[in-house]
Amino acid sequence: MKEQDHDRLLRIKTEGVREWQHQSAHYNRYEATPYKALEALFDAYDCGSNDKFVDFGCGKGRFPFYIHHHLHVSATGVEMNGQLYQEALENLNKYMERAKHSRSSIRFEHIFAEGYDIEPEDNRFYFFNPFSIQIFQKVIHNILLSAERYPRSVDVILYYPTIEYIRFMEVNTAFELLKEVRVPELYIQNTNERFMIYRYE
Image 1 (spheres, rainbow, N blue to C red):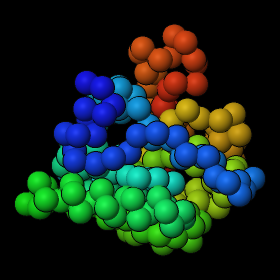
Image 2: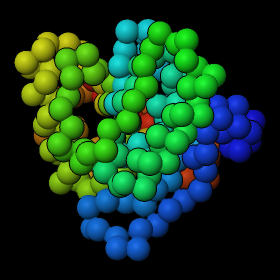
Image 3: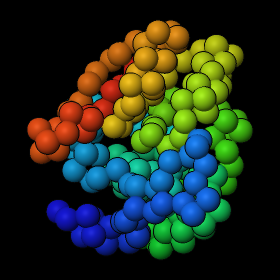
Image 4: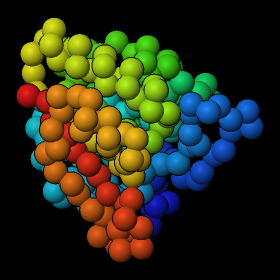
């Protein structure tokens, strides 16, 4: 299924790449995770109906909409850019016309990632290189503090992971690598086309 066809199925618009006119050294451009990559991830990675995902730097919301529709799990999208946040809300209105009877929830927060309050139920955290290593470290610190305060297993999922992200996770945190998932069609051309999944017990 093509990207635009999958968007049409979900009644959302998430395609395209967006560079920022006043680009900050800390925040990267907008680009949604390819649907074929999401399919590869969830073919290899299990989640339960009680899992609650947080997508940091969610943009227009493709990841939350995908998992809500296909896996029937709750998701929160965290986005600091006001324009992308508004587009995510527009997508949510269209999406919910069809999904209004779902038991799982989907919502978006307009806030800096490091300012998001990790909820006790949040246990799956998704990152597609949304920001610098400095901000990533703060967010991971917040996740670990929450896991200590409300003991639970938490997973961090990195797509197209940078060397800095991987090194920090493996050297400076108590997370352990659970699984690497390569995107079959894309990994052959680019070895960054993979997911690294880390777990903290």
